[in-house]
Image (tube, rainbow, N blue to C red; front, side):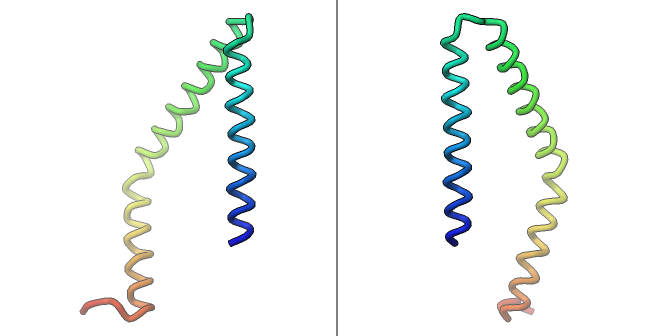
Length: 79
């Protein structure tokens, strides 16, 4: 659990630093750089959405199988 907490804290700090850096870029006078970053973020978000859409059904089936096996192992499976 401590490793998970450390991981979450590190992820939060990195995300916070990234957001702070992005805010600084927005205040910066170099508008072209800000637009480039915004476009890069948009492409990344579109990629994540496309991947999530493509992987939805396989992941849904995977987790159904995991739940089924956990129930069988725990003896909670109603037959």
